[in-house]
Image (cartoon, rainbow, N blue to C red; front, side, top):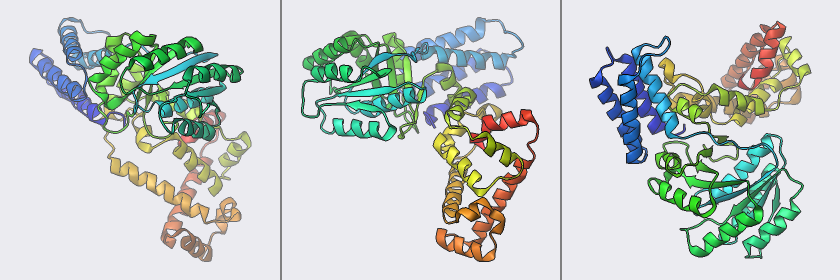
Length: 439
């Protein structure tokens, strides 16, 4: 999960507030100290932590209760609002024709992030293209061209040319028919004078509408210094924070934007090309605090290709085949790890904790079911009722499982089939079509 260590600490703090007998100054002091420890451990700037702590305490002691909130809910709401404010305003990224240049330190994940951003625009219905203007790092051209080929995004580069400005100029002409053009520049070891001049020249040549700085979430307190330097050089319009999955601290990179005056545009949340999302401070903090992020989950579902109406109608009549079930499992896999999906559900606020072991077990079960189905014939997948003892033994041998495991799969299918028969009304049909990726 994203920044799990910080999230776990903050959720424990909210639980302390919720369980408090009364909200007085002593309780507030304890809560503020817990928040300070959590943020400092995540590398958030000390001065920012102190400012945030003071605002939380002042507001909690002085503000009148709003609406129907009780004192505990009032304090939790203040903590939420101040954490959101710490991350700044969301960046507006246009879904129209524009040019983007990507800058950052070497090793920040900039090249991969460029491909991920191209994929983001592609999923929004725009024709995206990428220019490789990194002439310093060996392998940059090959890496970026392969990533673009994998996702079907147009690519331009000149592997033998060391003049990044010339490459950018010709690339812009070659790719002018595309909606969004992304220019991947060379990663800097530091802000050397010659590389700063090159970066400025590329920016002027591209007449870039967006100038994104890519920051590694593990950079720590250096994030602020680097962000300021890049901002002074070309005037940043946004920051992309990478590698925020797992136990990454990330606070230094996240809070750097508060000092620079720009905002976070996107975050990278994993290794795959689709582990990338538009950054919304309120949604991000909601996930950290265990309040869920249903909006992002719905967007993930909507990005999956919907099933055909004829297929849906057949399923609702009980004609739910093993092939249909296979498609549903594949849809879940494409949405990403189950841990990523679960963190978008408001489980933490309900006091529900799901151990990673349980999620891993569920994932492994789905994967093994798919292996078993890969050992079946098309006839068996379309008509599961013909699978009897001899076929079960053959399928088990072919997939390396026991006969009982094949029977478990068939039992699971029958349960799903009965569930489909229960969906009748037009209203339920519409719900089903919207939510089919979660089945």
